[in-house]
Amino acid sequence: MSLLEVKDLGKRFGGLRAVANVSFTVAAGSIKALIGPNGAGKTTLFNLIFGALTPDSGQVWFDGEQTDGWKPHQVAAAGMARTFQHIRLFPKMSVLENIAVGRHVHSRAGFLSSMFGLPWTRREQRAVREKALEIMRFLGVEGLAEVEATSLAYGQQRIVELGRALACEPKLLLLDEPAAGLNMRETSEMAKLIARIRDTGVTVLLVEHDMTLVMNISDEVLVLSYGEKIADDKPLAIQKHPEVIKVYLGEDDA
Amino acid sequence: MGRWRHLPIVALALAVIAVHLLTTVAGKPQYLTQLTMAGYYSLVIVGLTLLMGYTGQISLGHAGFFAIGGYTSGLLTTYNLYPRNGQLLVSLLQACGLLLAGKDMYGADLLLVRPWAACGVALLVTIGIAYLVGKPVLKLRGHYLAMATLGFGTIVYKVVLGSSLVGAADGISDIPAFPLFAGLAVTGKSALRTQNYYVAWGLVLGAMALLTNLIRSRVGRALRAIHGAEDAANAMGVDTGRYKLQMFVLSAALAALGGVFLTHYNGGIGPSEASVMKSVRYVAIVAVGGMANLWGALVMGVLLNFLCLRGSFGSYDDAVFGLILLAIMLFAPDGLLRAEFVRRLPGLRRRLPQRRVP
Ligand SMILES: Nc1ncnc2c1ncn2[C@@H]1O[C@H](COP(=O)(O)OP(=O)(O)O)[C@@H](O)[C@H]1O
Ligand SMILES: [Mg+2]
Image: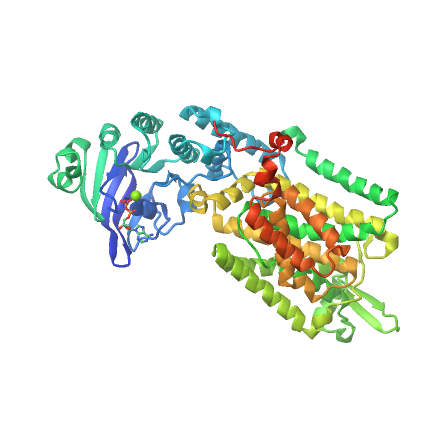
C-alpha cells in the first residue's frame, strides 16, 4: 500500500520547468531515494509535497488525503516531517529545545493555558522534554542537550535536524541530502541511522548524492533530470538503466 | 526549575515594596508618581519585547495601540450622552448599567460611560484593530513590516491630531478617575499616590507572571522558533501566521491596557502619546534591554522612562532615545548585557550564559 502518491505534479519558475508532470508512489515502510543532477528539481519536488510551494498542476495524496494546497503546518499535522538541504536549525536555542519544537503537533498548550501555567500544560512540558531526551538517546546525542544547536559541528547539526523531524513521530520522513557535508564515516553512520529509523516503521523519502548510501539502503530509486522522471525502479535495475547512466551516473561512476 | 518558577516574580514584588520604602525614607514620595507612570509604560514594553525579541516581528506602531486604548477610554468617560438620552442605544446602555448619571461643576446634567465599561470597550476596540492590521501586515518581513507598522502608527497619530472629537492638538482632559474597588481608584490625586503606585505595579507583576509563563511554554518555544527559522517552524507544525498574529494582538492589548490606566491616572491624554517618536522609544527600550530579555526590557524601561518623566533629559528625550537606538545597533545588537565588552569582564563572564562549544 502506498503512503504517498504524487500524480502529474508540475511547477514552473518563470520559463523554467522545475518539475514536469512527475508521478510516483512511496510504499509504506519503505525507503525511496530521489536522485538526479543538481538543479533537477528534487528540492522543488520536496517543497511541493510538503506544501512549502503550491504546484501549478497535479495532486499529492498522503495517507488517504489529498494534501496539495495545504500549508506546511497542516501537512506536518497529518504526519509528515522533513529536514532541509541547507540546515535550518533554530539559532539561540539548545539542542533539546530544537528537538522539543518537533513535538509541537503532539502537544496542545495555547496562549491562554500557557500564560496561566495550568498544571496540565506543565505536565505536557515534562512529557515533551522526556520524549525529546528519548530521541536524543536514540540518536546518541543525549550529552548535547543544553548546547546551542547552531554551535555544533556540521555532522552533529544534521543529526539534531533529523532528531527534530523524528520528534514529530512522522509516518513519512522527507530527508533532503542528509549526508551533504558529512565525511565518509559520518555518511555511513547516517545510512545506518536512516535504516534504523525505517525499522521503527517510518517511511522515508530521501534526496541524496552519495550513491553508496542510496544503493545500500533504498528499496526503490526515482531519478529526475531537468524536472522529468526518467526512471523509477529497484536500485540494481537503476544501476543498469541506460538513460540513468547517461544523464547521471555516467558523470562520475561509469 | 519547577519549584523556583515564581522566584523572579516574588523578587520583583519585593523590589516594588523596597522602592516604595526607599522613596519614603529618602523623603521623595513624589517619585512614586513617575514610577507609577513608568509602570504603565512597562506594559507596552514587555508586550513588545515578546513580539520583537522573542517572535522577531518588529512594530513601529505600538504607540498607536497605547493611544487607541487611552483615547477610547478617555473619550467614552468624558463624552456627554445626556443630550441623546432616550435614544435606543443610550437607553440600552443605561439598562445594562453601563452609564453613570451626574452633574458637572456648573450643575448641568451628565450621562457618561462607566470607566470599567469604557476600559473594556477600549481593550476590545484595540484587539479588533490589532487583528485587522496584523492579519495582512504580519505577512511582511523585516523592513517591510517596519514600514507598514510605521504607516499604521502615523495614521493613528494624524487621526487623533486632526479630530476635534478627541480635542485635536489639545487631546482630552478632565478624564474622570477609574474606580476599582473598596475606595481604590486610578487617579492622580496625591492622597492616593501610594495606592496607585501599587495598582500600576500590581498590573506589571501580573503581566510579568503571565509572560514569563508564556515564554517557558510550548507557545514560547514556537515563537522563538519562528524568530530563528520561520519556514522550519512551519514545517514542524507551527501555524506561524496564527502565532504571529496572536502575539501581535496580545502585545497590542497590553499596550492598550497601559494606555487606559495611564490616561485615567493622568486625567488626560494628548496626541504625543500616539506619536511615532513614542513607538521608536519603545523599540529602543526593548533593544537596550537585550531584545529577547523580558527582565532587561523591564529594568531599562523603568529606568529610562523614570529619568525622562523626571525631566533629566530636558527637551532632548527623543534625541536620547534615538542615540540609544543608534548605539545599541552599532555596538551591542544583542543588548547591553550580552555586549562583547561586558562579556570580557572576568567577574560577569562566569555568571552570564556562554555559548558552549563541546
Ligand atoms: N524558488 C525558486 N524560484 C526560482 N527558481 C527556483 C526556485 N527554486 C528552485 N529553482 C530552480 O529550479 C530548478 C530546480 O531546483 P532544485 O529543486 O533546487 O534542484 P535540486 O534540488 O534537484 O538540485 C533549478 O534550476 C533552480 O534554479
Ligand atoms: Mg536540492
